Image (tube, one colour):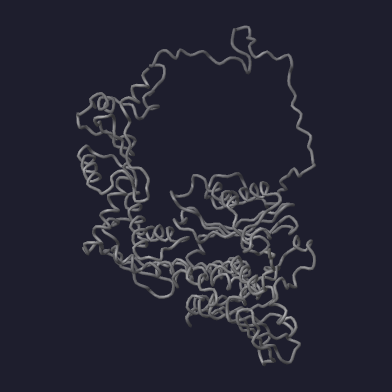
Length: 603
């Protein structure tokens, strides 16, 4: 029997590696821009066409490469960053594995031009699917230019999984933002289809955040800073009243590298506890700096998931620094933080111990001993009260807001087959049915009703848009703007009227009739949030997703008191729906409390 195991050819191995490192055009932009930063360039230019599918070029004025290095950099695991395994725990550069260029070259047609400052001429290399086509001298500027054409041309299955141009552009912008934000000393520019998206000059950290995210953010930023023996934390957080319903302005960086960290995100949200508007998330741009030996950045192919030695301690420091920042600006009650934040918070490391504080007690103290006048000593028994008399407890009914004479009479008069409706906590409608008590979730019922109304209006071709008396104009960051462009056709079918207003601004002239009266900007932000992490290729799926989102927003207002006629009308409209039992997302709308189950409670 022939041997079954064989070594893969380098081309196939590189294509497999590309599947982990290069997931979409944005991955190419990320890897090439990070390499440009590592090369010491202070001006980096990114040019894309067709959302990176047909063309990506990154140009820097960094150190450039020699002729030998230019050839060797496309070999897998060829890197200038590490020589031994221990170097992995002292990484401060953006890239270090030597996989990116080999992976990119294996799934594209690539052209490299590079020149060192001390060299008279540079090197020009052309590669087609890992095969080097030519290598020759060239007259070129100092630094490196890499052009990637026809990404995934030789892996058609991967190319078919790419999303729409606007969606892929959104991912490119996101990766560009992540690198630009943590390197304000570098000038960056981004062009797509010959149109300028970003032109960022070297600046300070706060100014760079404003350059990237928009001028409207400037007055919203609150500085945070703390320094300990474990970590230095600094950056900016957003004021709670400016929190948005969408994600997109939440950034963590460690040693000038973007990272995702749900645990630290939880620390941020906990710091804003009770001061955030409902269903919103604050902006934050937080930079951690610590010894690289206490950080593991090599646990994920994209190097965005990072492990820390002392995560719990950093969590506490992060929470404290944010609470201090909010307190300084009188955003939340706090202690006096006027003094410099130079407090060293002690941390117990592995193998260390501490002496517990000593507590002095009087072994002769008897808490039940009385004074001569029969009054209890300090720490003795409390004064005795007679709790049997209701009159001794003033306003006792206020402790039970749901219990009143009117509500009690409603409950007593609600008998089977009476057809009466009862409102419970402004959240449920209760009504007797043959087998027991029917409970209807009001918000979900409205969600189902609005969902079917929206789809019915779309299918009938009726005009579901409500013109705004005063059209609203506001700015979006480039990522959100690309999302609006991606779903604009479907939004217009639902009743929106949206026009570009120059730069990153849009103007909204109409909204679906079900949503009139809503805050228009908040409405757009809520819709965009549903599209931040996923999109649909089929128009029907996208329309259905949009209808679900709109129905949730239309039914998600403040709880109200319903009159009997209103509850009856909602009941009738719900049971006229095609599926009165579930929302479009599959959540239950109603349930029946069986009489037999109620009987068991009285056994």
